[in-house]
Length: 141
Ligand SMILES: CC(C)(COP(=O)(O)OP(=O)(O)OC[C@H]1O[C@@H](n2cnc3c(N)ncnc32)[C@H](O)[C@@H]1OP(=O)(O)O)[C@@H](O)C(=O)NCCC(=O)NCCS
Image 1 (tube, protein in one colour):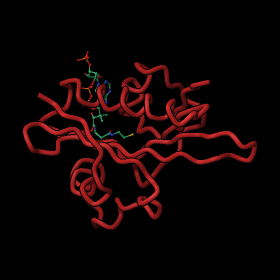
Image 2: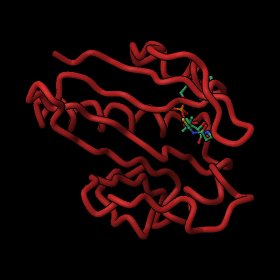
Image 3: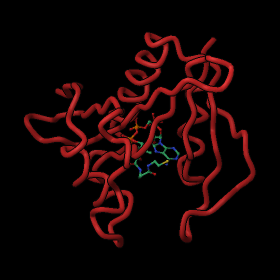
Image 4: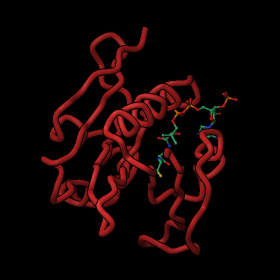
């Protein structure tokens, strides 16, 4: 059984590092404003097997805009529906916080996954190191 619950930023670092940026130093996966985020983990038994982090900001027009970052499921647990559960949780949380939209910098590898939730590309392709990305967004309001 999978349990989803809030975690600390520090709890997310090992999975962020191992899954997303294993070739970088651990500090690379820390976000300056991690303490302002809402971090959620999926636990199998007592093992943390997937993480995602939500940040909500107010834009120049005074509207709340949500962004998620550093989404990672341990390879042994991928494609079992855990990421989907975390996405539903984060979308619900963004709505609860009255965000008008939810966006992320999506690895193009994961684009089809994000399309399942109605997210669409809203930028040109760009690169972080050698990894191609595009900004994907979902309108909530
Ligand atoms: C993207 C990621 C977080 C998804 O988590 P997950 O736990 O594997 O997701 P799910 O098991 O809920 O996947 C749901 C469905 O989407 C599909 N899917 C998962 N990852 C996919 C991907 N990268 N591309 C296309 N489809 C994908 C699954 O096959 C599954 O399909 P099914 O319902 O037909 O079986 C995970 O694959 C991951 O950590 N990838 C490596 C890191 C990464 O790319 N993170 C995102 C950075 S923007």
